[in-house]
Image (cartoon, rainbow, N blue to C red):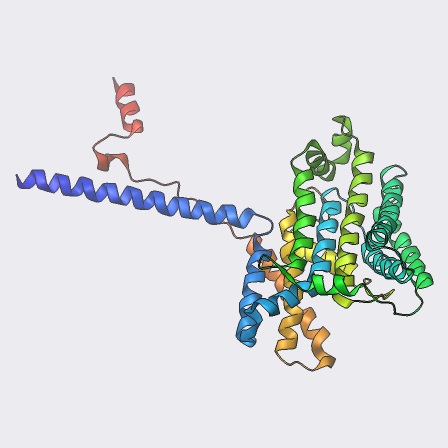
Length: 366
């Protein structure tokens, strides 16, 4: 009787040990999958700096404070999504910041000329799409280097914005400014701009075009041999990025409330930095658009952190750069972490079953 109880106890103990091993193995596999997600390190940075900002100024977590933060940083996030799609094809677009300025200037100017809101909106968006088509044609069909192409068009667009509005001025519609800072069903209106931008990408991602974009970024020659219209894919992504820069330009206009020909220029490099922090490869074919969103919000939180820490204005850029540098290094190190999988199991002798190796040896001896 005692031996029977002892056997039952040992079997139960072994049962729980097997389940514990399985649980640990599943947990490690989940962690490994999370670490392999390109956007995961940028999400960790975003959460970390959000907590830091809440500690520095507890009112930061209030709905109105978050709405103000989003209103200021949504243009960067929208442009970063556009840059991410271009990067997935192995290209780059540094003209999107100038396009944001152009959209802002054209929209405010047309409003000043008594155009209707919808007419001014279409005119501003159309001005960005024109240059997106120019970039896409030159890169996709004429096969000119994307960096040189967009550098040249960036100068042209910036000059055009200055020609339209030499000095900051004008005024966006008051109803639009008020609406941009409002809430809809408890959601800040600036979030809607990001949601629209992201949904546009999601729609594309789950179509053949989304597969073509990734294939073009991984190897454009193999994609071409596979009958993928590489030139048209590249043309499309630059037009798509310009559309998102137009959305960002309209959002920026709602935030600042006036026109400024230089207001969008810093956004271009910040958007590229946001994508790199978010895990997108500059070589193309790798990354997740979520990373561009997390990276853009992280950059915004860095600025908020520096301001919340009351650092003198002379050192703010220096401190921001140091924080971003360490953030990039931390994200890079986090991507290299890989927990070993628990492939070792309890010997089968403990369950009363003989290992297969021993059975094979007995057969060979016979």
